[in-house]
Length: 545
Picture 1 (cartoon, rainbow, N blue to C red):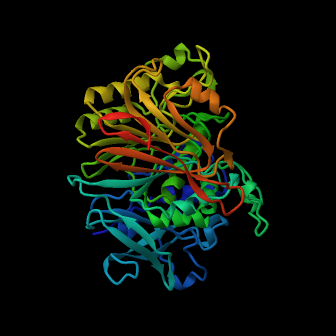
Picture 2 (spheres, helix red, strand yellow):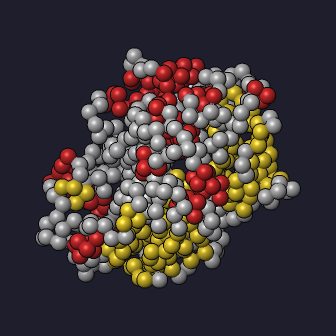
Picture 3 (tube, rainbow, N blue to C red):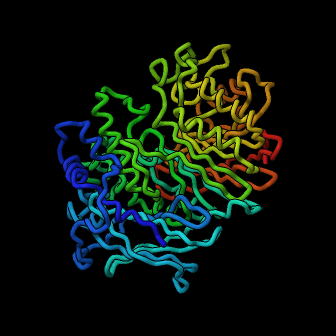
């Protein structure tokens, strides 16, 4: 049967709190954070709010499109959110109530062979989002899905279940995307991504940005529309974050990419605030105020992503998880933001110090680290793949004997990196592939056992994908191109333009194709491949394809 989140309506305190947070400050920010958490005190399915008549929806409720995500061999999550007026607080729907939403999933695009159908309730408390966890599906099969409310029908989405865990696969094809600042340009890369032949897409963070967006959409320079003034300030409240997702999700190119493939998502920092660390803000907020802000951001993230209902854990939202694709690949999707130690040395690019080298410092938190290393020991997959956020490999920014390093990346947490590499070594992992975003450029890097010794053993490879739009058009060779390649001999490729990466895994090779868009500050950019690289199974290392 289908498992839906519609019966998991929060208690009355959460209802009242979520409504108030969107309009005015709470008197007590700690109670606001608690109210925004995914609580365990949930009513049963019979305690639902009054149901709105479908005929009361006189405008198209499916303005944000559809999505699917987290496919398993027998299940996949289907998502939509009702928003007749996406640029308004409340999205044109009442502050309380539910809407009954029909859904169906079929073997064919015309829905002549429907295999499952049902209804879910979109609750006001969850911003009228719908998460349907459809199970009893066939493994490694393409399906089409759609939603209905009254006479309204959503766009059709295409999804695919994961292969059975014990199956011997010939190949899997994946997309790697990240960093899509709306105000920095168009999501042209997503239109091209939607035309690729992929099994799934990994989004490794910065789905939204918190910064204000002006009336012309920043560098999009709209002349055919005017964005409301409510977007022209930094996101801090639940209402702010919800509206920011509404803006992003009205983009037709992003909608096309979501409708084309199932996505596995994880966040980085901008879904809350730049370079935050666990419960520590970048800017001068009190810890209590920031925890409330983070809780609002986490809640809005779940409402707008094709994710299963999380297990309640205070104001945290557990995102790290493991997925198997037959015998070919094990994907350990990481969260390097929610549990990390604060950045050392004041953040930014700094010289290493005893503070940054402190062995107690962590990027993943102790629990996630143990989970990851245990997974390495138990893995029998050909490829162990880590979709995660920040650059793992060392990056010096000068050829001098000592160099500044990024305190926000794994360079700022060298003891945590060493523990991971030791775990890889002890577990006998032969084919490590790290997938990264964050830096708005593309790299291909050898993962060295000792980055300070270029002759040391290569234990894996890291494919860093560039941004979808963040930092504008970019350039093929940024000003530090020659310096970074000279300072980091394990860096084999560097390109500063926008785009995405496709990853193909078979039993002999891992192949990354860096797909580059000619421009994104105006529409119509063309796609090309700026580099293609492989790593051979059993003999890790970046080679030209």
